View 1 (cartoon, rainbow, N blue to C red):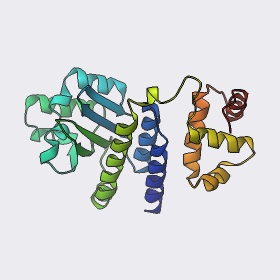
View 2 (cartoon, rainbow, N blue to C red):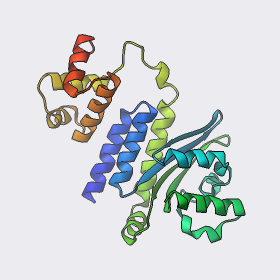
View 3 (cartoon, rainbow, N blue to C red):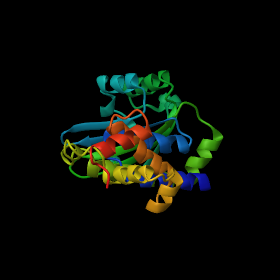
View 4 (cartoon, one colour):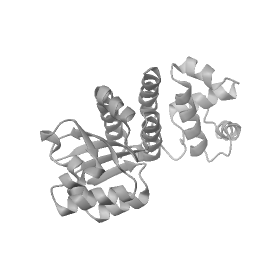
Length: 242
């Protein structure tokens, strides 16, 4: 359980510094794998339409929306009148309420999406969100983990939803064209330029080494740098480091 707690601490730390959909996708995919799941999917139903951030195959998500499955998916129905966490198994299609719902289960199985859990997050004015963790096969060990870790899994979903809701949609106007790095990315690059290791930076900033790596990877990507030293050189050249 120490590894699980460490993974969850890193997840929360990285969420604080995620700003784009790609950032959030990487953070959620990392916690999904750390907890023993293959995929994650975050679905938000808002006034301006649905929002999906997912590691599912794009061929599946395209098919899902093309078939209108978001309108009949049982994990997305009546979020205010159901338990916070919904466990599902695609092989139980016989319990489906309609032929289309049965087809949803069958189609998911064809993409090897077999079983998982969904944290349902009701909001207001018919808006809601759902955070899903899924696997391609079921195991007794995973079942036991889910049974004993429900509060933690719900917290993971709620944290992800809170940060996505607070940041997605406003980040495109949050920075200028001349400010490609977040404050934490600049800090990490500055310490690297001073010869500090990731472990050193983690201790200085009171975050995890994986959190530092997350910020450095984002900085390298945002600067279109080929390597970390290249990112430092570009940031220095552009006057981005303190």
